[in-house]
Length: 61
Image (cartoon, rainbow, N blue to C red; front, side, top):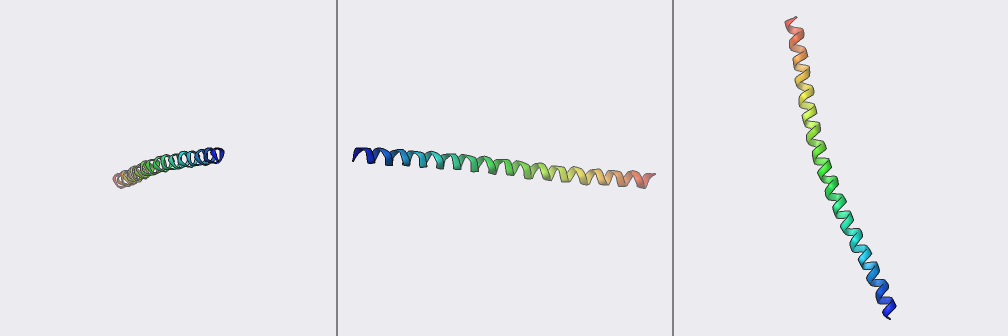
């Protein structure tokens, strides 16, 4: 009976550890995805500004 309880406790501890790892990795993924979205928006803004600058140089020349 005691061996059965030890096995169940080990399995529950393993499941709790797995759940914590899943929560942590999900939080990290969300953080990275948010930063990536921000960097993509900055890149798009810079690309648009570069296109406008090139068009203005063409218009001047």
